[in-house]
Image (cartoon, rainbow, N blue to C red; front, side, top):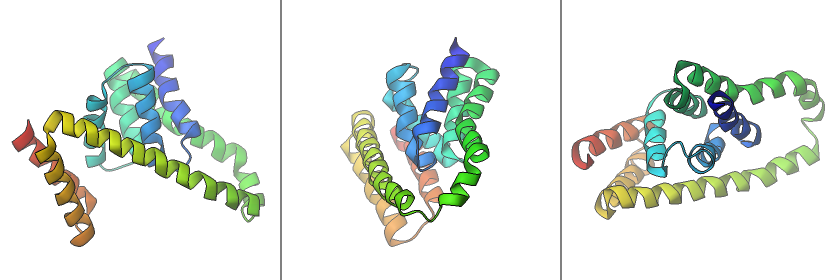
Length: 176
């Protein structure tokens, strides 16, 4: 039964997560935290931070780690497959339709309506993570990390991978 749950926990976000990996992050959180209760929001935040520090698609890294935690190596493989299966099925089944209707005004309008929805989901997740960070690390560390990240990425144009690495080091040295 756990293998089926792992499959569903990553297949469903893959189907409804229009917009790629970042769009599926809050959907995966809903599955693994709220629906199945496999981890807390704080644990999910830490898993997400670790997955963001590694190269590659975020959804597959989350599926591999969480699938492994729940059902071992086979669970990781099932989670990875479930993450890519919706895209694989759609690519095979709908490629000809996409080529036929790619310039359709209706398709462009639908895409324009979906983007704000994804932005709201990401904002909600960011607020939730900010709240979790405040509860576990305190205001001072949360503000330091947020301000430092802003200046490093927006003002000084430091690559986000280095900012994430710096935040991991900061957390390991000063927060843990």
